[in-house]
Image 1 (cartoon, rainbow, N blue to C red):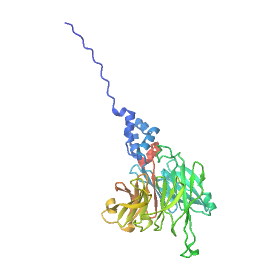
Image 2 (cartoon, helix red, strand yellow):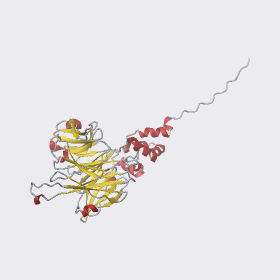
Image 3 (cartoon, one colour):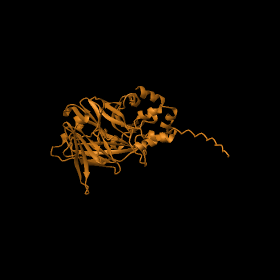
Image 4 (cartoon, helix red, strand yellow):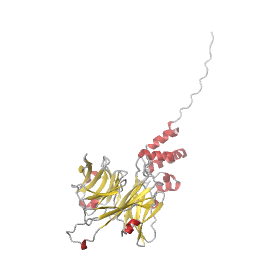
Length: 406
């Protein structure tokens, strides 16, 4: 009887740990929230995780995956001074000096707009105006001379303006546009002196606009329209919806100024006819749920949300969608008086509004109507929300130390 010797089985290879797979780790990191603290936390676990978290190709995928950048903080503007306040949770708040503009000597600065990671500043120095486009993350500055078309028309002051990324490549995600071309839109108006005309005289103020392109280095020809309102003024807060910028006209005016970036045209449309108009700080243009134009307004102790619907004949109608008590949104225990609340700005990339109630600033997400208290408020400040993918810079050792100890 023969006996066959059993061959010893070869030892089974050790099963690889799932986290040893770089591709799998990238997929996990891809699903982290876009705020800087989350990538920062995983990057300090090991050199390997840091290498994966800072890989430029991965960071590009991260931006595409999330689509829109998170809110990093707000620029506070008051009395010619511009400062930054981070809205990230401690201990990851970005120090104010990290995003601190260096003003030219003996100048007066006005923050006109913040969008797509850039800040638009009007700087008046020696009675001459110029526009500065500033990238807070890279500290790159582009000084743009005052529109010569304005000067030839006798216009020496900008009423309002907007800055936006001009990169139209498919797949481009705003919020890391450091090397992308940009556009600047400035608007102002010419009005007759009321003292020179009788009240019965029929005239309409003229609104002028001009567009600067960083690709050509030139301003466009003047674009103009008339506005059927006397004594009108512009809100400093513009809202970009699609390819159109919107400015609500101030002083209880029932009109909205719209600038179509593609058609290079100015038009004037009506605000919601039933919307409250107790003051200009109680309303703002927003993006509606369907991607069209919306309107947010404070009415007594309530927040109202409106949508503009366009029928098959092109006729636009405003529809009131929601009315919600501020007390419930903010989780407060008592009613909020009219003079104790105001809408500060609209955060386009987050679809939220900055809202002041009593002495605090809140962010209210319009889809869920959830809120978060950000900080105590200075009633004299204008607040400009700053959204960006703060990724590449956050991983250097110096900035990492600042974030952890800030």
